[in-house]
Length: 221
Image 1 (spheres, rainbow, N blue to C red):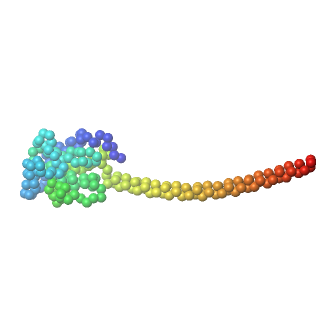
Image 2: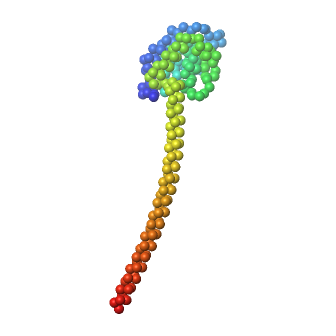
Image 3: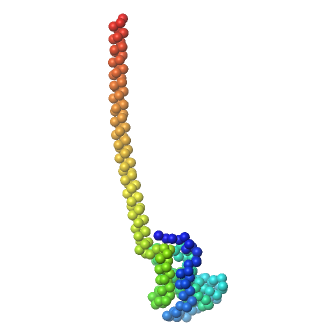
């Protein structure tokens, strides 16, 4: 069960500690020349499109921010060179995609700063960066802000069962409605027959009373 009471604010000490690790992260493999040119463009041209990477108010810190588990969260930040932020942002996009968009295909290059190939390679081989994402995920799971795949499947299963029960209950109610209508119809029919019999009995008694009255009058005349 989600406990999104204070998670809408970015003040999460545990996430802050994890996010700081990006500034000292050691990358196992360098970017290609083309990727470096892209990074330079993103750093120098403020009109450039940067996915999940924003400049902080101090104008020297790059932050990786993502709307995740009901809140805007800072997943990492570094100063100076924008390359680590861009790479980590693409990794985060791919890593958390199943938690953000259920049942959809993975992001394409248009959603990333570099490419799907780069992000997948980094997720596989950049163990320190991957560890940051794993620690972030585990923390969000622990505080109930993020649902695991098993939890989401359980919720979907419970929702399906609830809908099935509602359909069954609706069917039972409609069935009972028909049964009671039939019973009420039978009761109504019986009442009508009894009322008819009562009216006939009253008619017979009135006729007998009139006869007795007529006979009494004839005897006294």
